[in-house]
Length: 494
Ligand code: NAD
Image 1 (tube, helix red, strand yellow):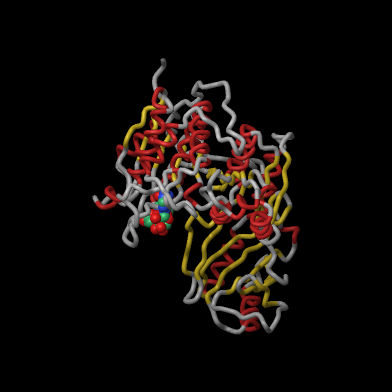
Image 2 (image 1 turned 135 degrees about the horizontal axis):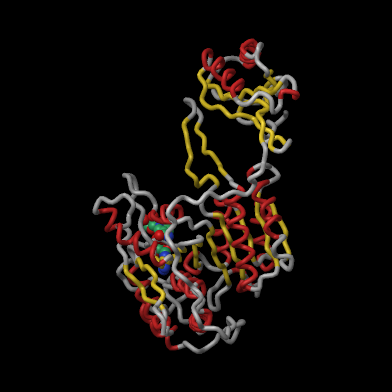
């Protein structure tokens, strides 16, 4: 046969080695190793302890780049010091833009829904790079800090296209977009707009959007109404754990981080230091993530074989001790043996995963990009400066502030149109009940829209310089019209 598909393998810390050994044993018995060669790499606490703040060796990075696939156990993040979460570093370094998690009712796993006979089978697709997880944070004044939330059109397009493609391959006929576009009209608004744009390429898949708070309630009340939900990063993070709760906890929730070149398959629970070395940890989450990987490389038949054996094992009441209500638990190794003994069997009480005809891998290792790829969505968009927001660190009374700023802007193409504090307008009108802090946004807009497109950005910079002579400025944001539409939101009350 042709060369094997190589997969970088990092067992992880704590219970990592125990659960990874169990998964590899199952893969070996199911014949996965006929096609796949696992390449062990060094990542995690030992690498942090050796002084590498990335938590992974150069050899590990090389292996991941060459294979394009990483299968990993849980890894501890050092508390304090320079070490960052390996999981976040991996996703960002390797451009794994979509996080795919599958939450399904598993036989024998006691949950509120299993008792009520309500099946849960939900995929959550979470954007993995942007949003507040960009980690762009600043202290602006004595009392104010900020986190910049970036949402990009190409970033949205990537995750939405992935969601629809995955839905199609899984036979899912309806995809929901979760968002808060009623409040964050520009950022979540763009996420939602790009969702509908991506949907046009998949006319057979039904779409719906749902506001995030309603989604959380609906998931708890009627989880059976959802098959796939795609969400921005932070909302997706929260909804993923909510969905894990529906099926019995994080121990039953596999996770894949998918990029154009590199994809990472991991258990989402931690290193469980309290039970490490005892041989009692549950390998289900890591095994299910491994099954996602086996499917990702095109070994659908082997993936279904293992998944059906796992479901049959759980259905037969063979459980590790963390499963709720389990009085006679088995250890990690015996659990793996029980799965191996059931390879070829299917669960009786629920629908077995269909075993497709093809067993030929479709995966090809990636080529390492030589430059950063520029992603564009709206290449022909035309923008013109229409004003600017200047952010000022001050505690002077609002009317004084307005008078002084109006004087500064007197001979410029801009006039003061609004002052807000914590997003709420306090001038020219406002409410005395609005409590304010030492951080004002002052908005200047063109006196005459005839200047639009004629003045460039320098007059706004000159105005900024003049304001800076009199006030402590913490930030500056040009206001632009894009293709004739405002590229800025109004303040609350404006
Ligand atoms: P944890 O998930 O390790 O443990 C929480 C509880 O769940 C513990 O009681 C543990 O025994 C239990 N548990 C977790 N996985 C289990 C399994 N497979 N089988 C049986 N029981 C299991 O969370 P934590 O204690 O907050 O974190 C411990 C360490 O793990 C920290 O260093 C943290 O940074 C790291 N962590 C890593 C990942 C990851 O690599 N993906 C995720 C979360 C936490």
